[in-house]
Length: 340
Image 1 (spheres, rainbow, N blue to C red):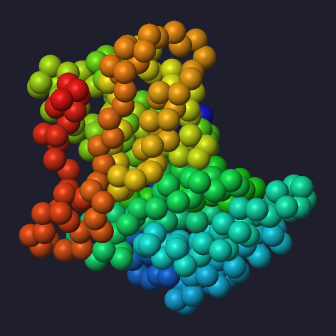
Image 2 (image 1 turned 90 degrees about the vertical axis):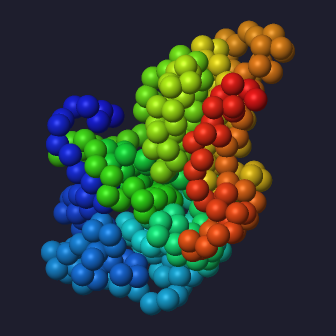
């Protein structure tokens, strides 16, 4: 596994996704990209820019507004040995592909005892950003975490974006890669060489000794910002990025509890059964070598810091309920960290 400290070369998140895609297309002629706008002048935020010119229109092409049908084409192509990358610039419309993803792609290998595989990558972009409406701003990480046969990754850093995408393309299983649009311009250290980021292994973004904050995708960066606010209050927080959501690094999360205090799960989906719930499950569930009394365990029970149960805010309007579900109030984390 490559480390983001091995080289000083920096790329944007979008640049890292582009480099991974281009490198795999050059390495393997079976890799192709399809999606609405992948061949337009902006190249899907720069992640597919010019690929249709370099590799031809048969390997990077625009698609119609027919998400279910195009996913079916992707599943069929994968069954025939191709390695499709399907790009959705808004994850909301992946809902139109659920039958193909859940009942077809995720189950083919199981139903045929491993005789057939579906090496399909679905890049799903999330995030409200400048205000795109309640039907264009949702995050459905947990929907896909429930499905056996699907892998789900949500890299935060450019380094992990490149490595996760390379791993996903080379994987014989269908993979959902979730990208927050507000990460695309974030810069970070990315090795030039090809490398893979393994599934089921969390990354520590910042060390700490008092509490642990777990953030997913763009919220991991908000966790790092929260750490600086907590330091002013005398609380030293460790920040964890799961990177891989299914499989989740349950052992790694559980190992943190004996040495750290209160854990806070931070995410931007709703309160009910979100992806942070899985983090909490591993945080308080049985772990090998754990020997804590009940009172000590209760003292360390995690707290969820998540969005309100409202549709995503779709504009810059004054709605208090909508605003609470999409904006980050870092001042809330201090009483949470202290157990208040």
